[in-house]
Image 1 (tube, rainbow, N blue to C red):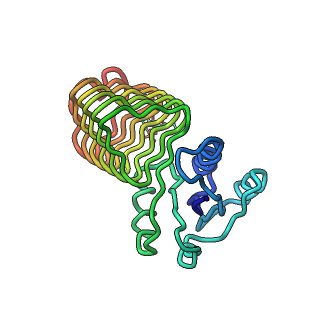
Image 2 (spheres, rainbow, N blue to C red):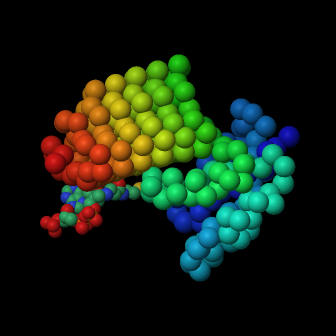
Length: 214
Ligand SMILES: CC(C)(COP(=O)(O)OP(=O)(O)OC[C@H]1O[C@@H](n2cnc3c(N)ncnc32)[C@H](O)[C@@H]1OP(=O)(O)O)[C@@H](O)C(=O)NCCC(=O)NCCS
């Protein structure tokens, strides 16, 4: 048995998310995914061609979710946390459940809570007693240490390290290869630049970069 799945977003992130679902299907822990295709309200011509190469159909705009077959799930394949939040607000009205995808090479430790729409990319690591909200994306080879809390729509980009006991508020983006040291807070909708090292709490709506991050 399989569960129908629609990926929202034809861009690079969305196509990577689709390949995660395919990899999950190789040896599914549950029923496996029947990949119906992509929806996207404004796909570029180039991305439509790239979707074609994956042999998965482009179904149309997000309003196609209105007449999706029963039991269809969705996953939002959009890397920017705040765009992902806006899209979630739009598609939530269709009442279609969000799928959680954990790549077979990712590891999720014990006593961890995962929200709907969670995506763990290849090599992502979550240790223990971590709480993860809705539509959180942990990109390739990123790590999240013990007892941390990642609120809804957080993105941790490739190779970034969130240490133990951190609190990342809703909509936070941690850039590629950045580090957040243990016990720190990052405020709502803040961005930590690629390669930064966060050594003190970051307020809401901030953009910080560098070592130490300012
Ligand atoms: C920090 C960041 C958010 C800044 O974005 P921005 O406000 O558009 O910044 P700009 O590109 O206009 O650059 C502004 C200045 O910051 C510098 N800068 C940009 N990103 C930087 C970074 N990560 N670390 C250090 N300096 C950085 C630029 O060189 C520029 O310096 P200048 O004013 O001396 O010329 C962004 O560059 C970033 O790192 N985002 C994370 C991206 C990421 O993880 N991508 C991977 C996707 S998988």
